[in-house]
Length: 254
Ligand SMILES: NC(=O)c1ccc[n+]([C@@H]2O[C@H](COP(=O)([O-])OP(=O)(O)OC[C@H]3O[C@@H](n4cnc5c(N)ncnc54)[C@H](OP(=O)(O)O)[C@@H]3O)[C@@H](O)[C@H]2O)c1
Image 1 (cartoon, rainbow, N blue to C red):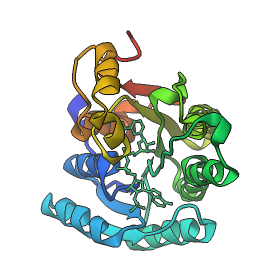
Image 2: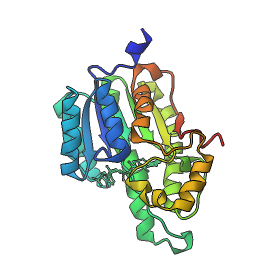
Image 3: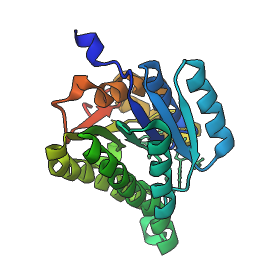
Image 4: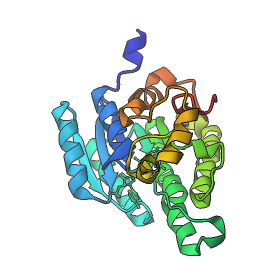
């Protein structure tokens, strides 16, 4: 039955950037759909809080602190999840950063900081998890893209380049790993209330300009991503791969 296809019973997931914001909400969404979830980020205290929320839903939670700009830490994280859960069915590849500056003033350090996590970290997490999924016979990888995978806005050149890269990486891995029954898709959030958008939320003029284009006339709540995450993590999306699913209150349609 179709609703059963959305259930994640017996599935083991990794969510990166799960200590707060969108990653936390998607981790809870997967747990609500009955997956066991390993939560990954650098801040262990915040991960412990999310893990307790997952345990409160009756699912297994595993806290794996890791800096995903470090390849050794990525590989150790994936090995630990495999050892503890015995398998990895779902990766939500979500950890990311943003920094703002006029493009003509960007320093190499600012550029590298963004690329190291948003695109390099995401690729090597996908690679390490895919090796496990290939042995298992398949899995679901969900990257976090952005409106900036499709359009440009001023002052975030490196972020925009990294999210454009995530869109193309999603397509590239989808066609390459389809033969292993690994679906690779991306969720492209619009404007959501998290730490990343705090400056924008506080800027009344820019916030009003953004909301003018959001068809549903409100900022996204991180919980608004749960449905897309569960869909792309579940059997219900078996014939969907290489897709960027915009969850943006209609921003792209405007
Ligand atoms: N909010 C939006 O409107 C929006 C829109 C489009 C796309 N996105 C994307 O959605 C994702 C999540 O964003 P968010 O808004 O939830 O931001 P957030 O609240 O700042 O969360 C970012 C997460 O990434 C983790 N992280 C950052 N650097 C890391 C590293 N080196 N190693 C491991 N984890 C790291 C952070 O944890 P620690 O600091 O504890 O490591 C945190 O859990 C990002 O990829 C962002 O680009 C957000």
